[in-house]
Length: 432
Image 1: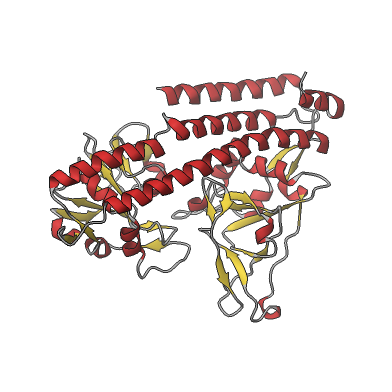
Image 2: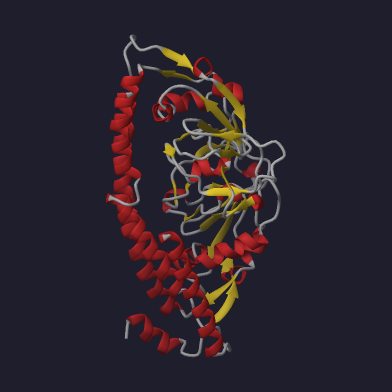
């Protein structure tokens, strides 16, 4: 019997109480700007939390004169902040000591655990669970940018075992997250090395012409809107703009989404070699991210995507448009806000070096190998991180499953069997 089994047998053999998040947290104060004239604060906004590392990686500095109009929450060390709008889903983290006393954007729900009831790290793992995000999906409201209200977030019910049991669960799960964080940090360092090498390789002397994209475009046009509820498992392959940021790297040969042919009134298509630009995003730094399509199908481009047709090596163009110089061009004149936009004319004016096709092909061969090492989840560090993350998710959902006080064992067994069946189905789908 494991230590956790012993603790459960000792402290909660007949099940545990389920409570709402709201019943397990403390109030969070809001700043009164009139009392803080000329003071500077770090501002944790919609782009501050890295969606993969679950850490605060970037903040703005604001004062009372430049403060947002809506009341803002003051975070403390060990607070949990959770992004409540769809672009922010899966953005959540624990506040570290560095940001104690700073200001958090209204795009986040701030949860301050009452540690007489629930440990803050236990609540953190609850917030990351599969069940919690399934709950969020069913309680979001809105069309363009669906969001879940703070009050609905706080109405989520979860198991609250005794603190001794919580402490052991946290110890087990934190070991997984610590190892994953170490591996991710190492991979991040390798990616920075790759980006430096890529940018150096794509820096040319004056003998290589610098061209605007409109000078090499055979055609350039915007896609047509495809709504989230119009995505199907089969049908016409398609790409929606948000997927460019979250699902694809520099190039791809297969779409992850499909839709029916009749749902879009005036569909726009892309084919082999075309470039796709996401012209709406949540970050100035990442606006107009570029990917190249090198697959065989004729696919549909969603709204807020610009399609560029050309006669160059598509991977070369995508690599060239991913450099630091290209990102600076894309972000020029853009203002940091909840949503950032670029235009078709912005894309047309982007400038890149354009060597001969033979040189383009050689550069692509080199960079393809580097990118595979950094991003291919089938090899090296990416594969190990993927395996550790899946281990964490499996044990997290397993360890956070409890019989509710008063619930029959038969009913609990049925629910656990359903979950195991769902996981097996998911694994089978992934292998297929």
